[in-house]
Each structure stands twice: as structure tokens, then as C-alpha cells.
Length: 315
Image 1 (cartoon, helix red, strand yellow):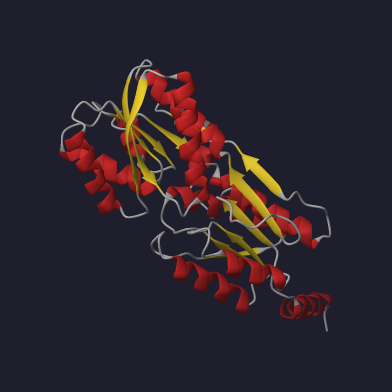
Image 2: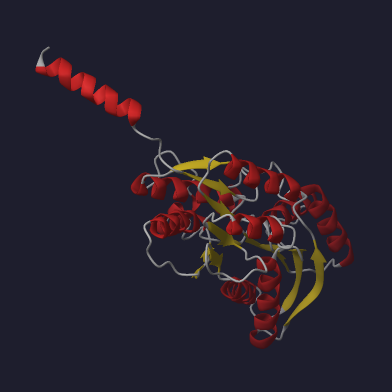
């Protein structure tokens, strides 16, 4: 037998006997949104560096919490050895996450926390909601020159981060810009049609409205559609949270977007799990700063990294 043939047989044998890379289940609130596809890109980039494989799946709707719970459980039952989760609802996910932790599954919750303290197998990588609220207040104060009226849309009591975001905005606006009045605040989940209806009702009630703060992607889309329908785009300033509707930012139809750094959340979550598997100490909580994006800084490398949806080659 020649040396070349022997080497080929040895390599083939090693390939057949090699075990597949360990799998991390990455379960966002939903897919096909820039907010979560950027997380996917970050997780895949870190997985390539740490020797993991990513299982990526989520409900088709952000309010389908039962489906998110089922996907998370199924992924672990099928062999995933760790979980990265962006919760659709805080209270409903407490028990499922506690059960996974009790089974020894390393779990990183990102973006918005659960009412479970970190520690053991549970870590958090969160958006700085206090800073998000301050940025939103400062931006609206700037574009309204300290005087006018604003409506807050998309308050969701089931998402802890959005509740904290709202409170920070209210507090900072009251202290720094007393000449700006919050004339209405509306709750809303992840239904775009409902968000549009809510916005249209607000426009009818507040004909002299100056600005809208949309707290999530559905509120942003619903407000955008309503403003476009009524010919008010650009006349009523729309400041959005969560990275959606980038083209209207370029045209000026949306004033600005406050981005969560979900790319970095996905990247660091996989790094934490890799470190934990190596027996290293990992932080219980990491808080990442958001970024105010306007058409002036949209094309900067920092912002483009936060907006990437190219998970196949992101690094």
C-alpha cells in the first residue's frame, strides 16, 4: 500500500470518527427582522471562532410565546447543549428557563431580562434601557428645540426592557425638557395593523402633534404607515427604537432610530457559553449601549456592523 493511499484511509477514518461540533440553540423573539438577524450574524461569527454550531429558529410572530417555549424545549431535547434566548414575554418564560437551568443547560438571556436573578448557568446580555430612554428624550428635545408635544407608542408591559425604556424617557424628558409635553401614551405589542390603528386614533385626537416615539419595531411600522397615509411623514417627527425601516431613514421620512447592539449580544453570548464550557468564570450580566442612528452616520462601519444580516460570512 502506498503512503498516499494510507494517508487517505487514515484521514477518512478520522473524519468518520470525528464528533460533530456542539450545538447552541439561538432563539430570538422572531426572525426576518434586522434586530434579530444581526444577532444571528454575531452568533455565527463567534461560533466559527469557538468551534460551535448554531441552531437558529424562532416564532413567525413576536407575540407567539407558546411557540417560542416549544422551540426552546425541542432544541434542547434534540441535543443542543446551550441556549441563547431573547424572550417574547417575561413571566411566561420564567418556568421554562428555570427548568433548563436545573438540567444544567447554560443559558444566556439577551436584550430584555427575565424576573430571575443571574447566576449559576444563567447569564444576561442586556440593552441599556436607561440610556435608550435618555437618547430618545435628548433627540426629541433637540428636534423640537425644547418645546412641543410627543406621543409614546408601543408600551409593552410583558417586555421588561420596554417598560424600563419608557420610564427612563419620561423621567429624562421631564427633567431636561419641561417645555415638551407627553400628550398620550399607548400600549401595544407586536401587531403592526393594531399599531397603525392606534396611531391613526392618536392623529385624530392630537392634530397639533409634533413627534412620535415608537418603542418597538411594530409600533414603528404602524406609525410609519399611518403617517404616510395621512401625508404627515416628516411633518410629525418619528423617532424609532429597534432597527427597522432603514430606507425611510435615508429619505428623512423617519428622523432617527435608536439601535440595540444585537450583533454584539449574539457574539458575546456564544463567547460566554464557550468560556463556561472551558470552566472559566463568566460575568453574570453584561449591559451594552444603544446607538442613535441618523442618515448622517448610517453608513459608518460601527452602524453597518450593528445592522448586518449576513450571518454566513459575518466576522
